[in-house]
Length: 326
Ligand code: PAF
Image: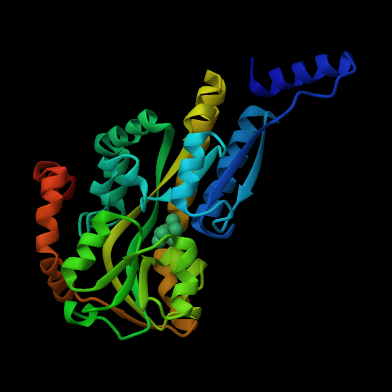
């Protein structure tokens, strides 16, 4: 029986008995960015497909712009079963499933296609499967694009330009190690504190992909944008394990289909902003420079000591197999 038909039959039976139609299950979905961002677009698509597949069995409530707190808090809410779904960056994911940290290694991926094929291939899918052991169910990898540095101190061309730069990083040990190795002064910080910390000068800069820089209008609080593309930024569509276990097989299939379509929409959005975002930010007054291949190589060389740590943590074989994945 299809969901729609089953829904109608159930509703009909209740109405015939004089009861209101059955209650809908609420899906609270939280994410850090605005409804018009890549997260908002994906969350909307996720809802649309779940509703199309299941009739009116579920009711979505969106909490954009960190409405339910920082990403770590939201993931903990999923574990507790107080929040049903989220779209998050890989920022704090390694605190829950340490293996995810491998994808946060700088200069790991050549381009978006490379990253997408690794995440959708066996290495990425094996890591998704590990979330069930920690009270979460990971439905799919999404993405934000490649991260770039913004700051208010100076334009950045070489590692000398980031010496002592007070830069906010995600609460992510892999990123932190890289910025320490470069000679910057990184401060891990939850996203909801970042804009006010930039406004108050507590930090000089931050790093995020164009998708975020454009949608949050970071140009209002940052002067320089350096297209460093130092690291790819994955995202993930997660649901609460208690919620997932309460679904029947047809409902699970509907959520899986919805997740696939949601991340396709997210990736489409990111591909677009990766090509249009720089012009938008220039028009909004940012001073933009792109690292030349030689400058990029200098940054890569500057984090050699961090790479030694990454090899120890994740295994050189795994890191090399990702780098060489065709
Ligand atoms: O920088 C971060 O913490 C993340 O990229 C953000 C902006 C919260 C989106 O997930």
